[in-house]
Image (cartoon, rainbow, N blue to C red; front, side, top):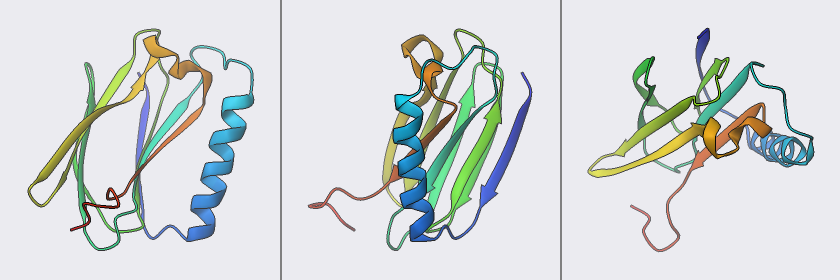
Length: 125
């Protein structure tokens, strides 16, 4: 599986709006062919905290990365039918994990997947 890993710093608010628009457009497109490159990004939208992101698949461990506020961790790969990437997030003493890309659950429909982190309104640190 070929892969690129990028860490982008300081996304501008307009970029977030563009990313959301691209996600909507991608969802409206017909199914993307298998074996085409995909990208997944995890964006730190927390207002005041660095985010530790550790993502991996069965075959590839992307390692732990510190993602600054307004920045993103992004990787590009060519999936197989059963490709699964999962991530663990950490902010101080809080932890969360999720499937970032799951080829078996229909994630093959989009070329770009963006995950944006934020605090629940009633649980801001």
